[in-house]
Length: 378
Image 1 (tube, rainbow, N blue to C red):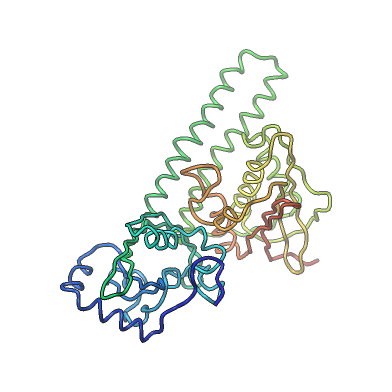
Image 2 (image 1 turned 90 degrees about the vertical axis):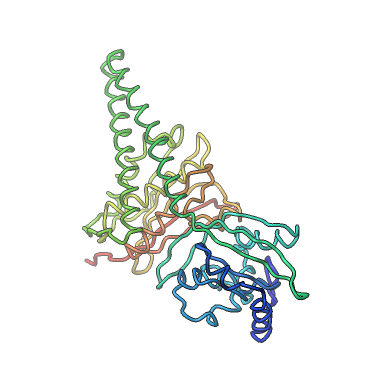
C-alpha cells in the first residue's frame, strides 16, 4: 500500500494474536498495566495494538479487547485523518504533524523513550471533537520481536485552562489597559479629537465583551448546553456590522476591511450572535495574517440553496499550518492561543448546521468560509 508518511504495511490478525500471546507470558503483566490510572497499550513493529489496559477500553467504550487488537492509534481514537488513505493511521499527509506518530517513529529511530504532545480531531457519534494528549513511546525487544510501549495522558483540561488564562489575563487585560489610557487622554484633547477617542473606546469595550461572550459560547458548546436562537438576518447588513465591530481592533491597525462589491443582499435564518462570533474570528485571523497596508475582503454570495459567507486575505498557509488549523490550541501566534479556528468549526457546524472550511493557494491567498442554509425564498 502507498503512504504519504509512515510505513503502511500491517501484520495479519493471526500474527497480532501471536504477539499478544507472547506478551501474556510476561510475569504479572496484566496486573501491572491494569493498576495504571492512565491509558496504556503496546504496539507491534507495524504500529498496531497488540496489548491494552482496561483504562483504554473504558475510555473508548469497548467491552471486548479483540475489537481493538490490530488497530493503530488514530483508528482506535477515531481520528478524522485515519481513514483518508488506504493504509490508515500514519499514512496521510496530515500524519506528518501528528505528535503520536512522531513519538512512535522517533522512539524506534533513537531506541529511547520519547514524549510528545498530540492534538486529535475525532468523530464521536458523528460529532467532531478535539482532544489534546501527552503521549510517550518506549521501545523494547521481546522474544525476537520489536514492540513499543505507549502511554497516553489527557491534557485537554490543562490546555483549556492555559488558553483561558491567556485570554483573560493577557488579551483582555491589555485591551482594558488601552481603554483606561484613552479615558485618561479625554481631558487633554480637543472636542474633535475627543469624539474620535470615544469611538475607539466604544470599540475597545466591545472587544472585551466579545472575548468574554466567545468564551461563554465555546464552553456552552463543549458542554452541550448552548441554545441556538434563530432570527431573520439580512446578509449585507450583517457583514456591515462585522466590519464595524473590527474596524478599530488592534489587529486592524494600518489595514483595511472591505466588503466585496459582488456581495448579495439575502435574507436567511440563523443565530446572529453565534454567526457573528464565527465571522469575527475569520476576520481577525485574516487581519493577523495581513501585513500593514494590506486589505482583507468580506463577501456573501448565494451558492446553490445555501449562502456562502467568506473572508479573504492574500497570505498563503503552508502544509503544516493547513493540516492543524481546526485543532484546539493550535495557533500560528505562539503558545496558549488557538481557539479561533476551532470555535468556528464547532459553532458553525454543530450548532448552526453549516459547513466551515477554507482554501489556500500561493497565488490566490487564503479564504475561510461558512456555507449556511435556511435562505428565505421570495
